Image (cartoon, rainbow over all chains, first blue to last red):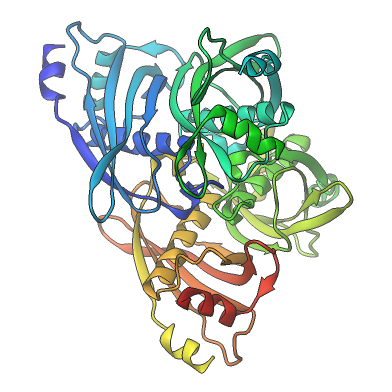
Length: 140
Length: 140
Length: 140
Length: 140
């Protein structure tokens, strides 16, 4: 697992365009839609680290904490995703730190800060698998 | 604000039917969709307490913590919503405690536990308002 | 295929609760969300006729025509789904006729009328299959 | 209205990134989500023609016909939007022709073809307004 910590430490950013349907009746991006943006960020992180596309062992979100610092309006966002550093080895779950930045003409502010805990399950047997199982699954 | 604590202490439950579109490519309800269920629960809580329908001062989610204890499959859920008790008066935000229970033929389990912090803004001026402003808004 | 025409002719209705997230920035149910309601209606129809749950051969929408007669607001809907009658046998696709009715205190009106053409594909091979293959798949 | 036909005749294209949440339990983009892509295309068309952003008179979809030619997988799409040409003047509604193209490594194919009829309503009074009212609304 030493390798995991070293190789997977990069932060990955993607740009996301707000869609008209992301806005709710308050006229701003709904709090549930923000989790769609975060998920797109994690898929991008997985792809960047060549961990996307496995069908047998899949990541599932088990816990999430989200700070909605400011409302998001129609426009373009950046979602940044990185693994949270940890002193202890990662056996059964990983924690992602994610940020959503929203730019207007004059400035860029952090609209959302999130921590997302992800575990891994066997998609057929619905049983918990280790981080290492997930990574081996990719290599095969 | 003493009155708020007393009158708004009831837990409100609603039943929600999972829709086919709530399932993602893993075949279970997506983590973002769970926040839609929680929002439906809060609207139901507001309606039960005659606090729904105001257009000028609207509730916005500022922080959320969600435990996804088990996956949710196609079926029927119950969302329970109550105000988290607090020793200190509520001036600018409230915290909801919410549960989602999922029933199968044989048993009912808690699928999701959530804490949701809600503040209030003026929908036109986009400025922060107090809990009391929100409640007065309903009465007018 | 005679049997198909005879046995599958019932109209199936389900009730759907509008969710807060179904409303867009205009304050009414978004036109895309209406297709989620229609899909829930078709799943209900399939379940009623014991045609739900097959994993290998799955229905896919190939064509849709929707009349949005009036806007849908927060409330409860009924989605009715039946097979469109046809003089010619159904080999590779079926057409559903669907209605969404919206009730207010005083009256019920038809908010949406839709025709939906559905074909069947093998979920692994991504090839077209016949209506009969789909039905046999259920029986096995 | 002569001017409308002349000035608004350009086709407008935007790129859309499929999000993980757009995929349903079949593993491809859900038919309802396709309407979100089409709406994003129309907003882009409105913005290109300086017709976006009015709050008082808003466009609403009254009819839609969609051909789903092939399934859409995770990747990038292009949505093209133009006004359907008409011999008769446009008083109360317009019809958009929209295409969604999906590119894989080797080729680009038309995944979706759609016709979308749009009318205009006063967002406060909920009454029908003319195309000309909508356009004047922008200018003010």
